Image (cartoon, rainbow, N blue to C red; front, side, top):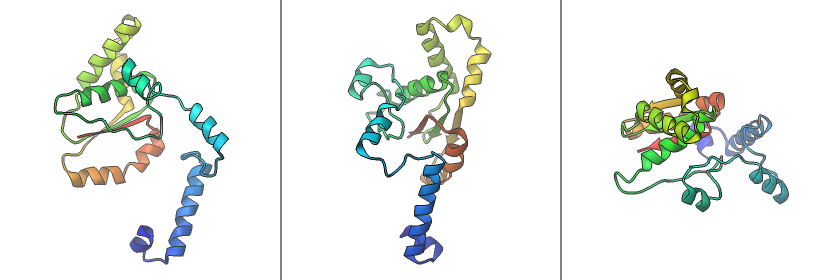
Length: 177
């Protein structure tokens, strides 16, 4: 209906456009097939690589880690650690060579904090001495950072994410704010 209203075409024509667009996305494997049977869907879900939060209680609660294609809302009082939790997820992603999109609505993102968490993660794994600081900084290149100080910019950013999503195929998209 929205496509018909925006383009001024008949609803049947806009429905066909949407169907064709979905088919193209499925063929390019940018979205999952919409006609999977139950067994195929179960296998698809079982093959998804989880992103562990590295917090045992949370990982147990959500079945081992965050699943791709899912939306998670992290909420709590000011200062309760929501941003720090998301930064930890970001570090897990970039440490594995995956891309992340971070949309910052409150100017709370600090690259130095990412490096601190990354160094801490390496210390836990016993890898910190084998990775130089400049190599850690190279991992920051896996982050697409976008600052959106108001609702209009946020909506414009979200509407324009398609190019980043297609080219970078981020493991994680965080909207912090």
